[in-house]
Every structure is written in structure tokens, then in C-alpha cells.
Image 1 (cartoon, helix red, strand yellow):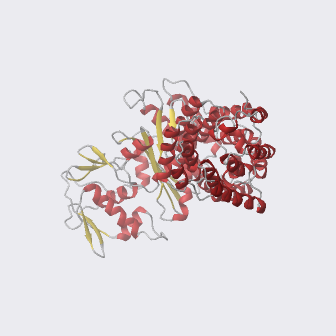
Image 2 (image 1 turned 60 degrees about the horizontal axis):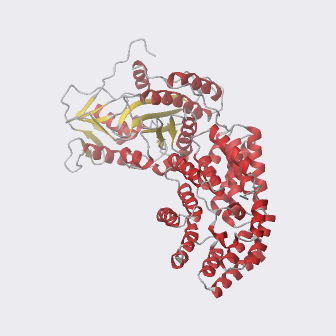
Image 3 (image 1 turned 135 degrees about the horizontal axis):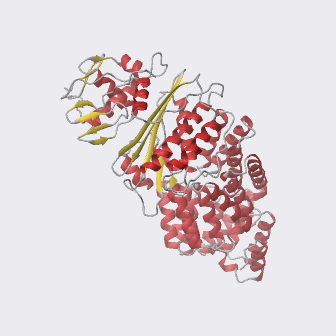
Amino acid sequence: MASEPVRVQERIKVGGDCELDPISYELRRSGRVLKLERIPAEILLFLVGQRGKLVSREQIVDKIWGKGVSFDTDNSINGAIRKIRHVLQDNPERPRFIQTVTGRGYRFIAAAAEPAAGPYIDPPLRAAAIEAKSIPVPVVPKPGARRWLILLGLAFSLIAVVGTRFLRSSSPARFRPENGRLMLAVLPFENLTGDAGQEYLSDGMTEEMITQLGRFDPQHLGVIARTSVMHYKHSQEPLKEIGRELGVQYILEGSVRRDSERVRITAQLIQTKDQTHLWAQEYDRELKDLLVIQREIAREISDEIPTALGNHESTSPISQPSFPQTYEAYDLYLKGQYFWNKRTVEGFQRAIDYFQQATAKDPNYARAYAGLADSYALLGGYSMAPQTEFMPKARAAALRALQIDENLPEAHTALALVVQNYDWDWQNAEKEYLRAIELNPNYATAHHWYAEHLALLGRFDEALRESERARQLDPLSLIIATDKGVILYFSRQYDRAVKQFRAVLEMDPDFPRAHMIVSAYVQERMFAEALADIGKGPWRWSDLAYVHGRSGQPVLARRALGKLEEMNRHQQMDPAAILRAHIGMGDKDQSFAWLEKGYSQHSNALTTLKVDPIYDPLRGDPRFQELMRRVGLAQ
């Protein structure tokens, strides 16, 4: 760092009543912060610094992306200029700010009411200016770690600063919700490399920020899950609207830029109600000078936490995330998670493939094994395949994950699902769910599946409260919204269940689980509506047989049953599919025969014996009470 203090003009007069902060990239009009993304802000800063001069597109590329870039920047520049003009309310036909000189470049023409602005500030000077303003700068890196670890190191350093600044910013002067728990969303980091193949860098940063901040201080800070925030990737939606949709008071947004020698990560913390920028930071590092390994940086975070919590009790994360040994394994894990969240048979199959590739790259990557366990555990129920085909694989993967990392919340949640659905061991399942929530109270899936567990036991008030906790952490999740409908259906609130299912189907008409609306319609004797909403997936013929049977159409019901039996002869399916048909047709003896087959094959259908209205015609039979006892659900 230079011995002389770096002096940077605090605000640059853009023109009219607009000012630009060269350090935080805040553009303000009459003191109000305007929304302008990082690349447009840098281009505007550069053009203002060259006020009155013609700036070629080549000069913009060299200044913003660096010399010798190999990707097409034309669209990036065109889009940035459009965004600048939009926020400045500048008409390209009659420009007041930016004049386009066709074929040559751009000229910033607005006159400054104050002395001419200072020059464009390159990243090293900007970093020095930030340091001069007492904003923390990451420690000097040590060489020797693997190349990809720079991102995780940067994430850790950033998390330490963000956590500290966030919790300090949530003093009484800032927004404080009544329950004392603030909500934060980490929006998808922008990939500013210009290369779509580098998306894993920005997506990886987003994932790690969510994972780390979710463990920072869960009693006072809730962090929105990745599945919800990824809806806003490349979105131009105003931050205030995003904050309202996600139910958060604060948003962290940032970007990742990388070339052959350097990586630059920027981030800023914003209060949604008035879009006040509370904090901004930039990390600019040479790739050859790698950061300290993740363990040392994690130690720095733990040192920061007591100070960050202020008057709160000092809280250290109970668990630390499981890291892969190669970035390739991590990238494969993220792809697996993407397909797992689709909640389709094909999605689970593709997720399994990616998780297996991740474990092949890194045999000690616990989170990849947990993802594998989740996928196997759900695939049987969605595909109608017997549980004996996939559940042993799910158990093996979950146990392997816990063998590697006994404090991994995802692994405890996966194991809970296995012992609940396959072993019908309700006590141990609840213990595993609660352990996962203890390890990471911000893990939405643990709350989601625990809510279903409570519903299966008939504890509906607790289940709905737990479902609401899951929704708050992952407000745009279709599966969490759908399973709230399932809880309402199990609790005989059919009208509310229909509304809940209908809301999901309006967002995604092909979302498989939401077609449980058919069961709610049947209980209300709305058979035409039930038939209209039968899905196209593996359960279609089972649903048709059930609805036709309940609606007094035995010929159509038997035709659908015949199709099911033919399918079962070609490839054995879960007994639940044919069981559903016989219950709908009112054939008790056949229903109990298939229930026994379900019991012998550990069918998922038996987990709902206590609460599913479909079984109401059988409840008075002693055979049903005996089966309830064997499954651990007797009164």
C-alpha cells in the first residue's frame, strides 16, 4: 500500500441531481439510491471520468474486462448502456447524458455543476480507498492451496465481514421484527466473466454464502434457501419487490469476475424497505496468490462472531459445512441439487447421476452422499417402483455421509426419511429430524420433512407450524407449498387443501406431487374436477381407477385397474398403486391383500395409515387395527 493516503472524491457529479459514489457504486438522485448493477455502474463511472471525450467500445472492454478477452462483449455493453439510460431517464434520440457516435463509441455529454469528476478508479486504488475508510480488507493470502479454493476462501472472508456488518446494522436504529429474527436473502451472484461456462463460479459463491450465513446465528438470522433465491437469477425485478416476495428485510447481492490471472468478488448489503446500502466490499486477488486454506479462514469467522453479536449471547455454528476436495465435485453436487429440486422421476435419476459423479471425484464428500440418499429415498414414491429397490441404497448413502461427517444436517435428515418411510421407526426418525434442525435451524428441508412426519402422526397443529417455518426459509418452494396442502388434506380441511394445491398447479401445472388435489376433490365428491386434474405421470392409471371407483363407474374403474395389472406384470410396482384402485372400487378383501403386500415390501402407503382419508372405509375392520399396530401407528 502506498505511503501517501489515497484521496478519492466521495461523490462524482453525474449531471442534474444525480451523483455517483466511486467506491460503493451507489448512484443517487436527490439523495435517493437508484438501482444500477455492477457492470453498468462501472461503465458509467468510466464515461463520466472521460466527460466530453469520445470513448470507443474497445476502450470500454479494456477498462472493464481487461485486454485480450476472448468472449463477445457487444451485448454486455449494449445492455449496460440501456440500463444506464433507463435509470437516468435518458432518451437515446435526444440524449442528455450519453451520446452514441455510430460505429465509434459513446460520449458523456452532461455538464457537471461542480468541478470535473476525478478519473476512473482502478480496482487496486479502490481497494486502498476502501481500506482508508476503515472497511475490512481480506488478509494476505498464502500460496500452496488448490486453485479452486480461492472461491471458498473469498466466501469465508466475505461471510465474516457480512455477518459482522449485518448483525451490527440490525441495531435498534435498523429494522427489527417483532420476533427478533431478521431474514436475509443472498441473491444469485452475477457472473461477469462474459462466459456462460463460468456460471459455476457465481453459483458456487451464492451456495456457499447461503450455507455459511445460515449457520452464522440462526436464532437471530434466517437465511432464504437456494431454491427460492435462484428464481431471481438474471432478474431485473426491483429489490423492494424481491424483499416483499421473500419476506426479508435485507438482501446481499454481488458478482464474480475472473480472468486468467485474477478473480474479483464484490458484494453489498441492502436494506429492502428503502434500498439503503449498508455496506459494500470488493475482493481483488491474483489467482497465483491463493488465500489461506479454508480451516484458517473458518477460524477467523469464529473469532468475529462474539463481536458481531453485540448484546446477544455469543453463538458459534454447531456444524461446519462439508467441503469437497475438488471444485469439480462441488460443481457436480450443485447440478445434482438442481435436478433433485425438480421433484420428477427424471429429475431424481439425473440427480443420482450427478451425485454419483461427485462421490467418484471425491469419495469423502459427505454432502454428495447425503444428496444421493435424498434422491434414492424419494425416487420410489414418485416412480411407483418398490421401496425395496431404492431404500437400502438411500440408507447406505446416508450412513456413509454420517460416517464422514456426523454433524451434517443433510445426512441426518436423509436418514430420518429412511427410518420413517422404510423402517416405520417413528421415534428415531423424530430424533434425527430434531438433530438436523439443531445443527442448522435454517435448513428448510429438515423443517419441511419434519412437518410431514408430524402430520403422519396426526399432530396437525405442530405440523402446520413446522411447515410455516420451512416456507419462511424457502418461500418460493413448490414442494413445501404442496406438502402444506397434503397436511391440510390429512387433517380433513379439504377446501383449504384444494386452494393450496391449486395455487401450486397455477405456477406449474405439471408439478407431480400437487396432483394430490385429486384425493381432496374425491373427498368432496367433486369427481369431474378430480378427473380433470389427474396428472400424466406414473400414478395416472391408479388415480383413474380410484376416481372412477369412488364415482360409481365400475366399468371404467376395472379398465384402469386392468392397465395397472398389465404394467405390474411387465415390471413390478409399489403395491400402493393397485391398493388405491381396490379401495376406490370398494373391494375390502383385495384392499387388505394388497396392504399385506405393501407391508412385506415396506411401501410408503403404510406411513399414511393413521391420517389418510382414503383408508376411512377400512378403519372399523380388526385387520386394519392390527396393521396399524405393526407399523407403529396404533392409538
